[in-house]
Image (cartoon, rainbow, N blue to C red):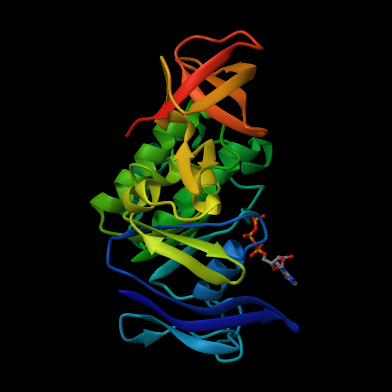
Length: 303
Ligand SMILES: Nc1ncnc2c1ncn2[C@@H]1O[C@H](COP(=O)(O)OP(=O)(O)OP(=O)(O)O)[C@@H](O)[C@H]1O
């Protein structure tokens, strides 16, 4: 189990994280969300032991994770970290990068393990390719495979699929997160993407203004967003009578007290996101067809 206990961290005199506490159980998947600059990457780096804390402690099981003041070499064998900037060796091949830290004493094992990981990140056909000529997304996949090579107990992933195109992203995400669950590897994933969270994360932490705003399951936070910041992560929403209502919770009905004049319809594939004016405020709702500008509709909340 990873335990973060009352962590406070500052860059020079600027505090970025204040009194952060949470736990991650063995094999658990925790997502960290928050606006850009809220400190997600910093939190991962601090957990990795890249910086010394101002206050607080971090433990993996009984071992305290310490920063550079106490450790000559940053990092621990049980924990791997894949940063937003992945630092690969450009002049050797994909498989050599992945196998770099695996022992040469067991060549057959090394070969098998490398092949298994290349399959997880869907790069088998690039095994012999030099990393230098790979695209950004392919390099990100090599970095993921390399971090998994020595089978850590916990892995820290910073926007792990940010460079990967939509064609590959869905299947790669399933493949990586399934692999981590199957091997009982805990993960902490900093992300902006709700698709990295929904269906995969056991818990999610919302960082805001240096602190943890919420720490709960994605199901709970989706249903009880409490703050606009949380609702906005999941999708388009409205605040009507001081209540957060997602666009997909509003339905057009014959008559109601919510009368809106349509201003715009956006094609979204299997539905339209329709924008309207409700008592001088914007309102968004989902509808199966587009609605002409200027038309009046009545809306009702459905749950
Ligand atoms: N090395 C550094 N020195 C000083 N300040 C830094 C450093 N790295 C980050 N910061 C500042 O710390 C704050 C948090 O940055 P961080 O990168 O952790 O946020 P983030 O939530 O990961 O952002 P993003 O989603 O854009 O990646 C920001 O205000 C940033 O400017």
